[in-house]
Length: 118
Image (cartoon, rainbow, N blue to C red):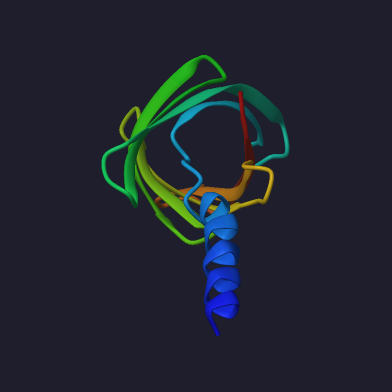
């Protein structure tokens, strides 16, 4: 019984780093606009708690800021760019990259975006 409990504890410790992997830091941005044209840049995610953060993008000659939240492998952000409000929803991949879809309030369609850790 003692060996079983020790084994279970070791498995739990081995799994902990992947689950607790921090999402904060700098990322390379690669995306597509509504019309399919490509853009690139950089994003910085700053943690404000275990599940919440702020995000800043510098892409295609413009910048935007938002708030973000992680829930398991889901990561989302609401943002403002100029006077437009947007939403992006990402899936957190095993390699730490974020693959998402974004949109802007009042516009038809969506774009894609991949954030790759630097």
